[in-house]
Image (cartoon, rainbow, N blue to C red; front, side, top):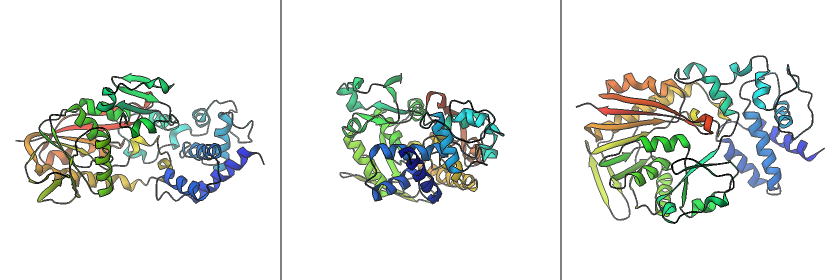
Length: 383
């Protein structure tokens, strides 16, 4: 058996064992840790085989796991031939294989009934087939130290202080030095658009990509962060220190529940706030993540449609319980990385009933540039 056949066989076994209970890259990482004898080149081929399969989505349902992998590998020139029957044997990539199948892209995307009417579902489906690009920006620390990016042979400046590289480009050293921050193109564009004033609360800080960017762009403002996970907040503080940013005032709280007051603290300060207190709120809420599925395409097969309504309800709860802490006439920035209407513009009636006026909204769609799709709405708390 040729080595590439062994890689395909291993990928088939992995996919068959995968139950979608955790992101596939973590599932794959656990497998490689248990099988340390597998070399780096072998790991690359196995990983590629798995993701090639996921990128077919729900199309070509009559083909099995191995058949889809071999179809993709043939288009990449990794194998010479395959007996897979499609209408036209002459194609250059997965997109062509799907286009020449019986139903084309019509079967590709799950939960299609939820897809926003402001977006093109076929265009997005085609984008998920490719892994896209990695985007980063120089941090304030990186700008001060004048990083030489010539060592990154494929780096391109696609916007002011926004750079793109291929997914395999090694960036760890620059990240660890606090000189760059990896952040998708759409996310960076939102941060450039958002106007922050006074005291700003990021209610679902997560890994902190947006709040770190916003803090650098609005250093005169005071930033507060919260999340339900202590480990996430600790990691955010480490990233801030690494980039030369002062510690945030942080709180481990669940904003989806009623809060009478919130205690924020860092190593040197503690403050308890009650409503109303903040001049700006950023609610980058938990969501389906469908706008970034090109990064984790296993969700095309594993995502359950009832999760859309689950996330929509969670999002409303977060906005509802964060809103009392916002001063009247001030702004709440609502952000998701979803392409589903129910999580985005479908929320506006609920927000209006809460006392919020939608000033503007937009899908930041950078899939043609190798990026993601994010949604942003500017909401004003009524007087």
